[in-house]
Length: 284
Image (cartoon, rainbow, N blue to C red):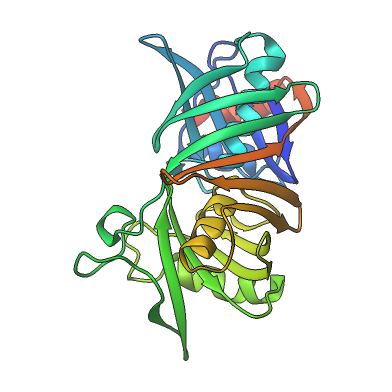
């Protein structure tokens, strides 16, 4: 097979398994495959498993061809794929990403229910990164166009900017997303979450992903938004994150580690037709 397609709460990825296809992955091929008009269409590509020194390695690509450090939804989809095709037999295992190693627990493979240890968070500016002197970026005002917004920034292996608001909407995140993502204060660009607290155990978010745009659901965004809400004293440690695509459960441990539990589903598998494959080979 040349590709497998999975989704997690409407966030869809194409898995390219280098052990099963000779398709070469680079920026141009990622853009071509992910195009919803002239390709297969997806929110990104998961390239793996790459086996190295006994480890399972995964490379994650945004639809614009840029490489992402980590993706919570992507890791859950990839974990289900590993179980579906028989790469792993154990309930617990680890996956190495550009954003660090993550531990995975398959709670129910058939239902796609998977728990991921997303690791430790940090609010330190140089580790996110955010420009300027080293500091914790908490409730910090930034100028966006004609307005001033209070942001809290966090890294969970990839960078996030969270803005708590009384009311959030898709229209608002579409307006702010490109401006925040490409704001000069963020040298590597950034993911944006608009956060609305429903109660001490529930939050709602709208998401703009770096390199992808508007997204119905995101695992790492859920972890980031819940962690920021907890840091600001707005919620408890266990939080359900509501998104247009569905819900993810987040558990913030006293150690600072963040655990995410949610579902992922297989959609399709297939071969590229020779005409399309020749385009990809021509760009390798």
